[in-house]
Length: 246
Ligand SMILES: NC(=O)c1ccc[n+]([C@@H]2O[C@H](COP(=O)([O-])OP(=O)(O)OC[C@H]3O[C@@H](n4cnc5c(N)ncnc54)[C@H](OP(=O)(O)O)[C@@H]3O)[C@@H](O)[C@H]2O)c1
Image 1 (cartoon, helix red, strand yellow):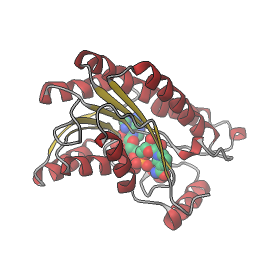
Image 2 (cartoon, protein in one colour):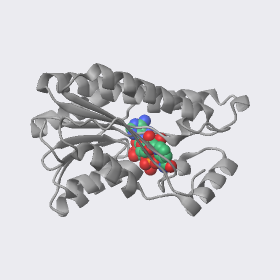
Image 3 (tube, protein in one colour):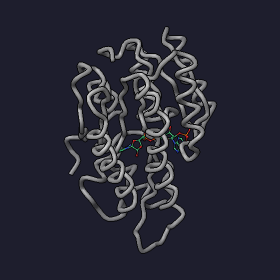
Image 4 (tube, protein in one colour):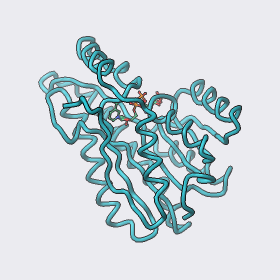
């Protein structure tokens, strides 16, 4: 694998907003070819146009990470268009916060489907390509929710910690040619809280985010650090949180 970000082909799930969007913009500016996946086509199109107008390279395809075939199509787009895939960033995620007593079983299932199974589908789509190429880098966006467990976040944190566990196992299994990185952001100013269903929880999280959240660009910089290391240097785990976060 080449060093650096320039000319790398980088697929990003959940690229239509927040951290994924910031990664796409920052990496395209550094000369990567970014392959964008998410469900909102209008947002992907606008982002790709913005990147291309600024002189970068971007492609996009509707990608619902609940559908394994969509991840395969995302990877296929990268390979068909650019001849390879260097980095797969499993970033798509949702956060439905509630007390376990509330039995919001459908929300639990959705978080398992998107955060956990979606990441596994991303790994399953990219890994055969990486093995064939003899190089590749899987980056999973996890969360500090899984590091400091608090009420309301149990199932969300559970999905993230499942990803953390799988990431470490994959790192050990990957061998000398592949890199595997887990990035755990703390509070980041994105649209994540906007999709929370409980009005009171949503308002509380948004208020806290307004006070302490860091920029999605800060997370993109951490991802960039991991990719920018020499090919034989594997950044395993990174935690990036606001200094003010407890
Ligand atoms: N913001 C934080 O404080 C924070 C902290 C720790 C970890 N994280 C993690 O960071 C990641 C990115 O979240 P964010 O904060 O940037 O939030 P965001 O702005 O809401 O972005 C989430 C992205 O995930 C996509 N997504 C949701 N469901 C999807 C599905 N079924 N298929 C494909 N894409 C889907 C959304 O796109 P579409 O709706 O267009 O599909 C969107 O692009 C998530 O994994 C989240 O858990 C965030």
